[in-house]
Length: 102
Image 1 (tube, rainbow, N blue to C red):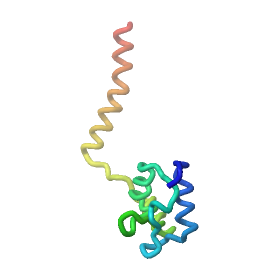
Image 2: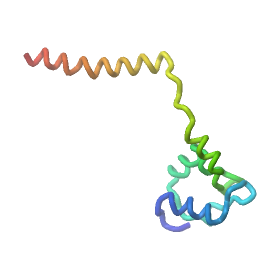
Image 3: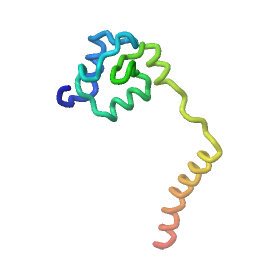
Image 4: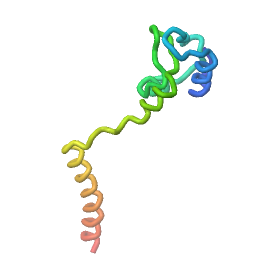
């Protein structure tokens, strides 16, 4: 593997190799270096997938679009309560500081 140059050379190499299916997946050793965190993000977002262990391929444009447009997590009562507590704190702290400074 070559020296780390970011994620774009990795994606370009997969595209040039026409690695768009499990059958055409490319060995990681044959691709430009990519930071492990970038690889993890691409796998989590379904931009790339792992074929056999150590081989990777690009998903189709339709798969990438649907994976990236997933809705966010629903608002649960706990999330709403936490957001309200944070906003209340953000408003209350300056108010109390102002009262004390008077």
